[in-house]
Image (tube, rainbow, N blue to C red; front, side, top):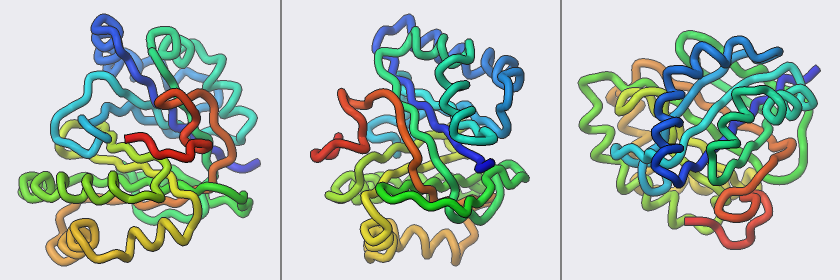
Length: 236
């Protein structure tokens, strides 16, 4: 069996549904561990704009989870009661299913993603997760607006969002790219992103970090009215 990761994004347009989603950041912690076959999981909020922002976005939340295989991931994220409740309250949902192709680092002291020998043609995804050292929080967030603008302006990025488990200190970026070349070009390009990466390494900004690449094995739902994997015009 090949471990499959699911990331489910939920948009809540009505104020009462946003309040429900915020309450579930506490309540769902007791429910998710009881979902059959679930492994590692995280509940996440998001930032304003495309997510890379210190200001929280009360409209968008996410659930990341690992499963023993793709069939189980697809079944549980559609049939488990907690996921059905999120879908019922949400105005729009999108779930993407992933196999890990490479990973380094740890997440909360664990290594949650298993590298797969299977490779699939098509778009690729990148996830970065870091715990920021308290003394570096201000410097990190001062860099974020410029980095966000570069990612948002890149014509190749198919989907991008910043999410996190805890405001300010635990940050996750998730992006989808059409191919490895486009992804590598962005990473190597000199600019705010590259300079921030150099500062992270030289000045040891993070207490813990993880970097993972994935192949995409499927998706369900829409974001901005269609699947990000099929859009020819990238959503803002």
